[in-house]
Image (cartoon, rainbow, N blue to C red; front, side):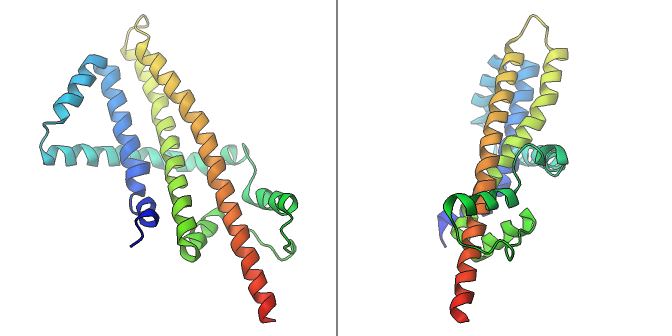
Length: 210
């Protein structure tokens, strides 16, 4: 088994659900208890039993999955899609910029989900890279969704004079938004580029057969 191509697919849940869920749980503890107790909690975590660790991982997975539902609703909304070019526009630009000789009248751009599954089946190495980009993008989206209510929690739970958690969360949110923009562009560009390459090869093979 090719480890580099299997990891992004086998561990999508770890990248896009467990990790953001664990980070958000840690941030919640930090807001409620402070940084000193958070550090003490990490030290105590080294001596936890295996069942306790599994319980924390499961709770992290549940948190990540629930917030992921909200994230996917936003991802499918017109508001999110209007913020950047769609795959069809990117493919058209690539044809013009890189002079890819494809009959655009015969080129049909299906839904993103179909392109994603098509690439995973017919080009597993490229599909694995795209799956990893998708998982990282979704991780950032879930972290952003989870950070917003934590900022509200920090405002109401902690004293207004104690700004440390609020500043940390605002920096965390701003960094997450910038990273999300970058990862989403990488994901969409990779998806469209590989789809275009596979489509052009398919058309070349058909010409040879004729």
